[in-house]
Length: 399
Image (cartoon, rainbow, N blue to C red; front, side):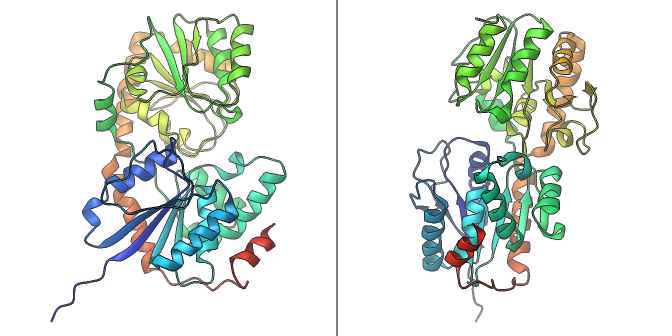
């Protein structure tokens, strides 16, 4: 008598499905994994109780742990869930979830794999909290069966600075659902803008460096408006900067939109002025809409996307194969890029190049790669057991 293979149990873990690039990628991965349900019993753990911007598929069991944003509570509740459900593999996204997954599986025969969404060295602050987080990452990440990095720059940072064996790292760019994005761009625009405009999107935080974009827009003296979609603690500072540069009425800060794609699709170009990224989803989404783009050559991702090479070495504007790159914090080079896109022929050439490049990040290709890594992790030899007595002692040693 033939025995039906028992499906492997995969527990996906993320802080929440509130708005954000990692959350969107997790939802996309799960939504496009339904055809694997005959081989894998999938479930999702959400560490925090937050309103979801992205709905998980209806067939997926969801465990809501309500950990309140804390690492210790996240680890304890996830450990209880792992003990109850005994998954064959835990796959987590984002730093807190990744450390919690390590703690939740410590001393148990349950392997875990993690996905790092940011350039960790650039992302963590240079204060006491940042030093603690770096220590936790150094202790947790090398224990993972596989570490998924969203760009080569993220992979190199984890290997060079956090003790992750390069042989365990797999670089998987984020999936970008170009067909869905283009369909949503046909919906009614909730924020029509008269005349030409430049668009950017992201949280209003220092690392996104929208102050640089405001200064470059002022210096470029190009016609039209600048629209920055986002919300965050830098709003007041940015509004003061707009007033100081006499840009009142020309720079708009409308917050996040439920559907930003109609607005993005109507822009002349998209700008990413960040000091650090992991994989810039918004940049590739704009490219999928056929927008020419400008980005800082920040760690990590933009240079790999736009120039297909590692970052570094820029001294001014670089007209790369798929978009314009400028050094970080160089408002003169960014202003020059904005002026270059005033030429319709130049702009059209880069619009076509951007659309073609975005196709390389299709959902089908990306989801397939994720499952290849999951299968690698399941088949890999077990890791050595932790030397400590359990996650609580491990956490105390990490402080």
